[in-house]
Amino acid sequence: MASTVLSRLALYTVLFAWIILGLSIQFLTQDTWSSISIVQYFLSMEESGVRFRALILLAPFALTVISYLINERAKLFQETLLVEEELRSLFKELVHAFANALDAKSPWTMGHSERVSSFALAIAKEMQFNEQDMEMLKIGSLLHDIGKLGTYDDILEKTDPLTEKEWELIRMHPTKGADILKPIGQLQKVIPIIKYHHERFDGKGYPEGLQGNDIPLLARILCLADSFDAMTADRPYKRAMGREQAFVHVKEKTGTRFDPDVVKAFLRIYDTSNS
Ligand SMILES: [Fe+2]
Image (tube, rainbow, N blue to C red):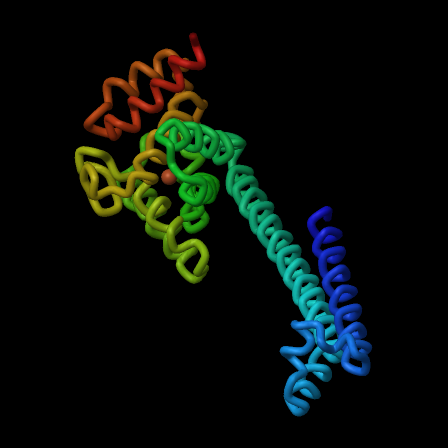
């Protein structure tokens, strides 16, 4: 705001000075004062003097028009920024609403996506990821199980052990999730996070059995965050572990299920939050 006022003040000052200069030269050219060096220099040739006087008289108008156009462009730019900001916040709200709708499919998963998102972001922050990656991870965490939309609800509610056929269907949900989001151009960096969130560091995960650093790092972070929340929440087929027991389990699975660097970051947060 202050910068706008200052820039307008500067513009009006320049315009005023320009007008005064123009009028002065007009006055001087009809007077003996035209011997003053600067005016004498510009007006020494009659033809160029005419051009110069015309230029000086037109300059304030030209500047006013240019200033008006610049202001209009600035207003349009600001309006575009506002629309962009509104669209961005609408998109974020839609992602949250979608995650809530997914979790609401079953009382067992209520709040799961939001909790996974907060664990994953805490780890990524500890590992000093940049803002853009954090944003991608947030969306990926909130929508990580979107592929379960294509999985039968009765499998997810089942208390008995799953059959091999049912496991096969469950193992398809990361790929289905990636397929659902594929048409959305802005989510191309999010798709690998979702597609590989069930890969294991030792290569025994699914859907592709990727190993170690071949698994995108953000997907390795999501894997730990997702698993930790699953361990510490009741499910139809098992009781929740206590947090202490879950931390022991995470340590035991370092290098097999989980990336050692991700586990280290996770445990640093845990140690910090308990010191
Ligand atoms: Fe999943």
